[in-house]
Image (cartoon, helix red, strand yellow):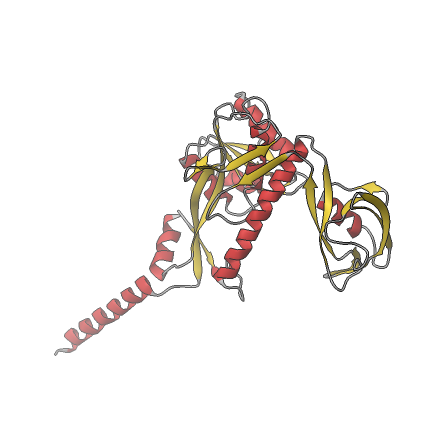
Length: 341
């Protein structure tokens, strides 16, 4: 074999090896792209996504309120990553941004499921509070050891702290966070129908020893004669909260909130109705527009990013809480322009 032929043969072998490697070997990156959208006023697999039962009137809805998602491709080859990066259809990011070091994919999925369930609970509480139903704060767990052991119990309802009424878990966080370790806090507690004052001496908060700490988890409880079930399979994370809450308001409010329009959105929500920012808004907006949405509810914290990447034909509505979200949907339904980014 001549030297030229040997060189060519070696080159072909190397090219084949590199090609096989690039096409099969996985790299430590994941790809983010457009995920599916779901009209939460509708049904999935023949089952209504948001079902309301109980002694409360419900009202027919029209139009769509779409929750949006981001698709994650976790098994990416070298050639696949390069192709997706060049096409611009995906964002290729280090794997640890989605699957933190030390956590398995199963652990990450479990946490996403927990966050999704919490977003359902918070959306229900936020919507019912918006509609005027009374809200209280209930003690979940009491940390052992901790300053509240023997003083507070699971199921206690906290009506006030230091004489100030509290109606959401965030109210408790704010009240306790404003105290210093060692400070006595007087909690007005309802237990078994009896109201009493309980004094708890705060401890240093883990991670910030300058602030007070009660050592409890608190959950919002809204007293409403309604049972709300949100059923949506194979979705995780907290970012559907705003759309869930808006849809519940629509179902429990006379009239047609959407006016038959196709509206999408995203954003976390807490029990008080405050809306928080999320990730992947570019992909969520693209998916919503592709599925027919003409308007998109954007968390205020995502506005700058949304303006840079909004697809043509999609109206952006800036939202910082549920009240603004509902008002934006009403404006869109009436053919008006909502406050925008």
